[in-house]
Each structure stands twice: as structure tokens, then as C-alpha cells.
Length: 124
Image (cartoon, rainbow, N blue to C red; front, side):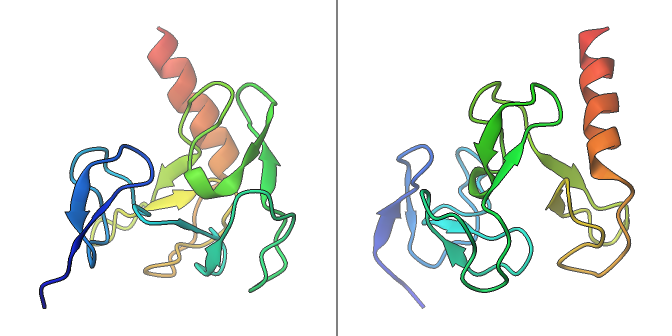
């Protein structure tokens, strides 16, 4: 079904209104933010998710700055807060605090330590 083009809220690229990803910037949420736990729509500035009650800010494991969970990256240092699901058939990016993949249900290793290892590897 064809829909009108809408701008991605992250990069401004005009994409189909029913797109699940932005082809230009790779955002998984091109038209709004979603809660990493329950995948319900959330808004910047709210304290909690109305769907599951999750706090919508988190301290970045790399720079320790408080940041909004909906964007998937730290607002202070710009580093990604997402880790890749280890299921080879899935591979979806998941928020680092989750214990299981929201797509396939596979358990996720402690995401914070994975992010720190990735950062240290980049610095070498």
C-alpha cells in the first residue's frame, strides 16, 4: 500500500510513511520514539513509559551522562546504546539493558559490558 512520504525525525530524509527503518540514517524509529522494553510509542520529556512504567532516562555506560532511552544513542557522547542480538537468524539491535531480544526472545548477555568492550576495541 502506497503512503505519503514523511521526514525521518533523526535526519530529515523523506521516506515512505509505512517504512520501519530510515535507509539514510538507519534509524529503527524514523517517525517517533519507542520504549525499548515494551515497544510502545514514547515522547521525549516524559519520565516513564505509559505502557510498562520503565524510566525513560538512563546513565550511559561509557560517559555516565543521563540520556533519553528512545534515541538508541547517548545524547552526550553520541555512542550507540544498542547491542546486536546473538541469534544468527535475528541479529536485531537491542537496548543494552534488556535481558532478552524483543524480536526472537533469545537471552542477551549483559549489554553494558558488551558496549564497554566494543568501545575499548574502537580505541585501540
